[in-house]
Amino acid sequence: MAPVTVPPIALPTAGGVPVDIARDDARSAAVRELARPIYPKESWWDRISGAVRDWLENLLDAAAGLPGGWFSILLLAFVVLLVALPVLSMARRATRARTARRGELFEAAARPAAEHRAEAERHAAAQRWAEAVRERLRAIARDLEERAVVEELPGRTADELAAEAGRALPGFAGELAEAARLFDDVTYGDLPGTAEGYGRLAGLDDRLRAARPVLSGLPGGAA
Image 1 (cartoon, rainbow, N blue to C red):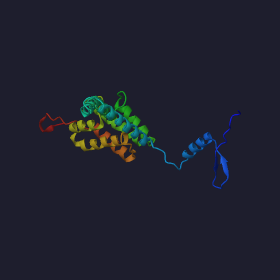
Image 2: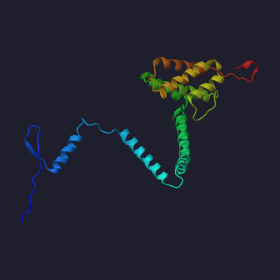
Image 3: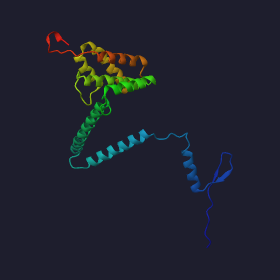
Image 4: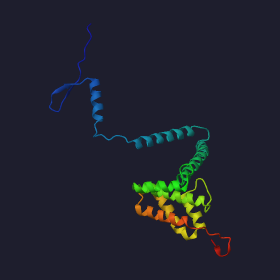
């Protein structure tokens, strides 16, 4: 007996004309239709939240099947908390360490104040004011260290410099604090430097070079 051939199903079109569509062609047509941009697609957040929700549901289902029921769930949550706390603590310590390094006044090996001052002037001549401000404050810090007005301290921040130098030179405390804020603004706050700001630092540098620290142990705070 000859095999019986079943003809493909004839589907009418909108105009009433029958169109033969094989099964694979119909599936391909459906995939192409669903891929059109008119159909909403699941966002990455929906996929992540759905995966987390499924994981929690599976976890609860598995815990519910253990001896003890909800007690097992609470015990599991306690174990997860014990594991998570040290990890969070280490992450906080790493963040604090990065923040401390980020605030350091000097980024490389120590150089004389004269070199920082000369580099600041080169930046200022090219109107690179942020770089000029940074190098001028570094020149101030190194000059104060070279003259033993402040202790030479690796890793010092601009604020720490202003506080220590302000105690030794109280007449300049306010200007030193302003200079530290200007340094932080152009270095870590992504604010542009200005010729005016650099001019204030250069003037402060010149006056500090002639200043002498206050010796608080002498009568009347003599210099």
